Amino acid sequence: MAGDAACEELDLGMTDERKEAVHAFIELAGARVWDARMAELKRGIGRGQHIGRALQQRHALELALERLRRRGGGSAAELRLLALAGTAVAAWADIGAAGRRRLRASLQAALVGEGTLVPLLHLLRTAELQRSRGFTVSFAGWQEGAPFDLLLARDGIEAELACDVLSAEEGREVHRGAWVRLMDRVDPDLQTWLAAHPGRYMLKLTLPQGLRSDDETQDRLAALHGRIRTMLREQRRADHDEAAVLRLDPLLLAAAQADELGLLGSLRREFGHEAHLAVTAAGAGVFVMAARAGRENEVAAAMRRRLAVIAPARLTGTRPGILAMFVEDTDRAEWRQLREQLELEGEARHFLTDPAARGVVAVTCMSRFELLGAAAPDAASEGELRFRNPAHPAARAAALAPAVLSSG
Image 1 (cartoon, rainbow, N blue to C red):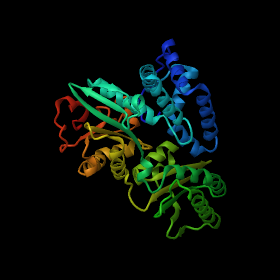
Image 2: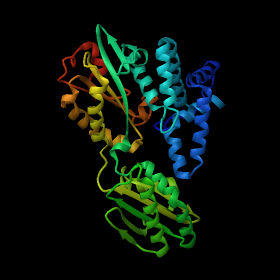
Image 3: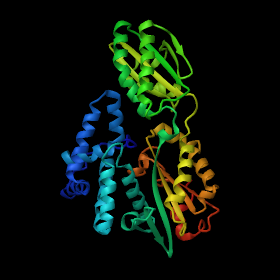
Image 4: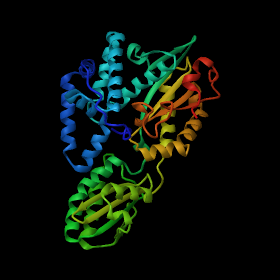
């Protein structure tokens, strides 16, 4: 599962209680809805090697629950996921008829189209964190239809907490979703090329206009695919215009002698975390594609823009407000970069000076690395990053400190 590569795959057993928790969670959405989603994912994963791998990563949480449902057992991370599913089942018992309708709607929305379980599990994990810090937590969004999700109470003070998910794609000019679709188009051509031209090659693509997952993507993918096919057919070394710069060279990295995993690691060190990389192998031949946008990614800046939109829409302004952001579609290298270079902190603090942040006492950030516990490598030690707004009147309230005090 994403964010849990370091967890041991220990079979911790599947008690009757755990089996019941899996089935109870699935019943919240409806077994037919769940089964239809699993069938849809199976079809999508079978459409192509690269898009299939991307779908497995994006829907790792749903697929893990399905494994638990069918086979039992599970890794430590999967059983933490099961505990969050149990939190949803427990909430269902306490939130009344209207709340149950809203919870079910949220869950069913997660199981259609581009939806995932991340927003729901982020909400549940945040509630769990705040309870562990001594807060009384109610699911106000489900129970009362409030614009925020959770109402926190501790020592006579209340705070509103709104959860939101930002895809890192919003800060990228070259989307990973578009990249994997391009690779599935190009891969057969690369296999043919390697059969006729055994060797090691690298095709570098610079895309000043980006490659985004929008309505124009199919046309742009087709055009870029056509240019790559022409380069290969005519054995050209370079092709460029305002949309793309392509250069084909021998692959000179020493790690080309290694297996694909070793090669990708070396390429990642060479090109950095922002590059999109793919390796096609045929016999002794290797063909690497590496793509970058014309400028650096701006994931943290995209988060700041999102915060400015949701603050007035999700918080009432009558209580201190907390915005709990989940940064999705990011890998370990990118998440480490966002944290270590203080990009998230810088943009969060920039937002907190905006008039739109007047009612916000803190911003928190989480990724898949924190979702299932703080034991995974590169996870924030307290389960989230926190940035307090020192200008808010409640910023120094002792009762709120566990939820708003800036993390180190």
